[in-house]
Amino acid sequence: MHAAGVWPHLTVVSVLDILVVAFIMYEFLAQIRGTRAALILVGASVAGLVFYFSRVFGFTTLNWLIARVFPYAAFIVIVIFAPEIREALARLGRRLTLASSSGAEAEAYDDIVMAASLFSQNQTGALIVIEREIGLRTYVESGVSLEAHLSYDLLATIFRPSAPLHDGAVIVHGDRIVAAACFLPLSMNPVLSTQLGTRHRAGIGITEETDAISIIVSEETGGISLAVAGTIERDLTVERLRERMGKLLRRYVPPTPMPTAIADGRGMDESETEMPMGSSDSHLKPGGER
Amino acid sequence: MSAKDFIRRYLAHNLGLKVLSLLLAIALWFAISVGKLH
Image 1 (tube, helix red, strand yellow):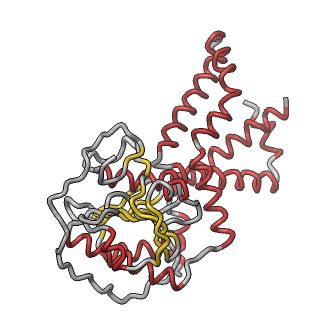
Image 2: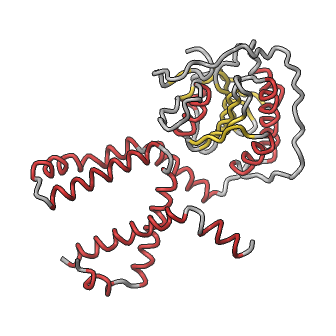
């Protein structure tokens, strides 16, 4: 090693340089931790090590093969990491603009929490996706356009099992319901619990592709889940959901208890079952038919 | 915010990942510096 020859060149600028690179690496690793990108990164690191040792030990053919493939690695990385890159840039933009939700949006989100409480009590399956920085137009177009003011009553109406729009996801932008009965991409994360049905996988899938937030209510257990950045928090209480949403949407949450929705149970059919798991179709209508 | 809270929230949080990132950055700087010398 040439450590003795290198260390004297360590200046204040070098230290700053290292710290900046370390910060970028940390943000990158924190971003991809727990996602499929992390597994891909491990695979790429192993390929890098194989390349290094093939050169050290004189494995000429293997070294030649990897050397031919490596120039294309940048393109492969861009394609594979596209959602993560998009998410990282959106996050950076959010930090720079210090985006926060307006008062009208804050009230609308309380309606979502109340609706989730109602669905939980009635064990009505529901999937609500809240758009943030990354647009969801592709998914909006797969459903029925509504462009309606977001309210508790409207959500309760949409997710009634007898309602034509109850199958699929509702997409919310600001204080408006943009569309209902939307198709979402299913999560392909193999680490996810096998107990999760199609609705949950769809709810997580959209958060893997975009920076959206999903609120999922299971029609089997009535459990409320929140998915963000490809991870899911299950069996949340209404208060916890409200707190998490306030944090994720950057708004002040007063410490007053949420009014609980009164479940009337009318029209909420509990016999309806979720779709079977393990479907190979990657774009299914969550909790409903294809 | 107390010093303890600050440390817990900003330093101890994801400490392993922070150390790993720092080591990787040092290793990268080291590798590049060695390359420049030759």
